[in-house]
Image 1 (cartoon, rainbow, N blue to C red):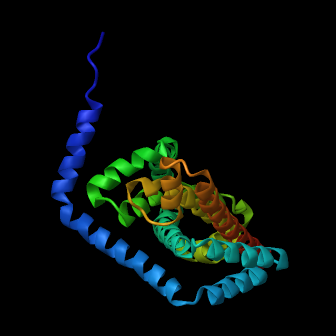
Image 2 (image 1 turned 30 degrees about the vertical axis):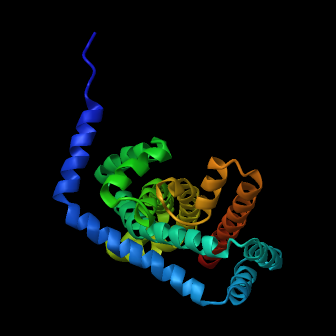
Length: 279
């Protein structure tokens, strides 16, 4: 039999080398992400809960419909009544941070891959790897690089949630009708003009669908990240599981469901409005 490949040892050596070589960079990222999350929590926490509930419900009414607005009002009031408001804000801050980073990295990478076959051949296998690797595995290097707490949860969530944004950005741009591309070329448009004025506007509904999926994945990963000290509703679920408190776990899980439905419906309807605007 062939000797076992020391893959685990190689990975450990690589992680140790990266930690020693890029320790300052990781510390800077950790400080920046931590401050950003704390800023969101402080900003949202500064607004009285009842006022924030009304504002979110009005947003849901404007973007979606009155049914989602009523659901938002009742669901958020329930979260406040159960005593999970602060935990909900922490979870929301983690999700928003992870999704924002995913968008800032994912959309440019998706655009680049859509314009270059060579880049796409490199990016797609990486995305396959990122999406098939068990979510818990991402927590291990995140702990080594960023210790425990908020930052490893955000970093693991970004890695886990970014692939849909990249994939659907590529898909949306590649699905732009060829006759439109030919028309822009006939009129002498540059690559930048074609991308900004034709491809991206037409691809926006598909890109928004990718962002929607990234939000859902980030929310699920933030809950898992409570195992490494990430705050929020996931902490309550994890505590309930370890202490076998079914009722507490159900309450925290119900709060997560409310947030997931709200984020899903709002982003879906924003995507539909974008599609309506491009028709």
